[in-house]
Length: 464
Image 1: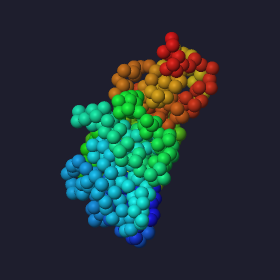
Image 2: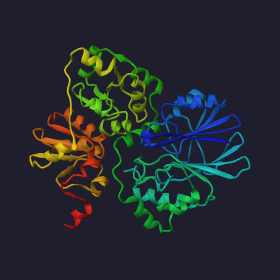
Image 3: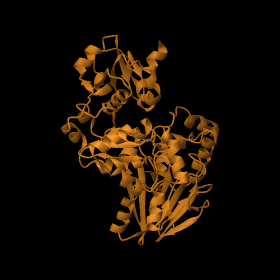
């Protein structure tokens, strides 16, 4: 038996490779499928199954392309309906993989079709369970992604039963392999570890503690932040099918001359500059949105933009393929190409450029005392509630595309997040909307909180 976790940090997502006797299975693959084929080939195995724990909402799965390339059978759990061929397994159904047996456990709650896959070893003993978004380390999957079809309370009730009748009855030593780790929006507060055991989760996971179904429903439905809009679009793509990764990547990998790049922009394409914020701020093509590859690039692109938007890219030399690949993972299919030679070629042609002014803590402390300058905090509400500048306004980055219209284009804004990555995204976004008096704050709140300024938290606000 061989099991490998293939973890992608920027999506906080885990896919899995399982192998026995020359037969392999992939659990919850990403869209760029070739990595799994190469892994199987390197181990002289062939891919027999692609297991999908549910219709993923936060990324586009690679199951369709992977099955088409390898002949593998796509396995979903009970109640699944798709627009392409799959094997809809029954609860308790057992599939053979070499000397291993993989048992399907229907665990509705995150979604109706959500299922876990229990691997039994050569002797038939339960060894590991792939829990998808049903059970995470320290958390469980959010039950609010089927608004209008099922209420979050209905799904939470299903989750209660699934956990207690299917997962908590497994032996304590069974390894838990979830689909996500810390940072994913598929749970409220997922732990930093990317695997655990049933026994450890029964001890430490709040959702697995003794409680009535009514208390459980209330506990897991309260405090859930709204799901990013692209979640519902990605889930639809995973259910109905999507353009092949090869086709999208081929078009995206088109090197555009300056003239062709300008023509694409003139016809409506949006410019995404994937360079690091420190490089972007000192010079960029006017109208560019900076989302650096050094952070949660794909997530923020899908949160701020519409995944159906047509895009052209500006990247560092050699980063074109990565920039395209990571966008496809969250559903971007209309990538028209990248600027050949990157920003340097634009500069060399003496084209007009723009910049974002960034300020250090000394300048920020001086500016923050001027009441005619507004401070925008683009962190999450949970970060804001913990502690924030009393004079700041919360304009969370994940909602900025809707709330920016409340801001005044004639005012000056100092923008900060926790460390600087999100604030540059916000500054560049506002500049694309015609805001010229925006400044990015170096170091973000991590540095700001050490200044001699007035702070408050949700608790102090309440007491006042």
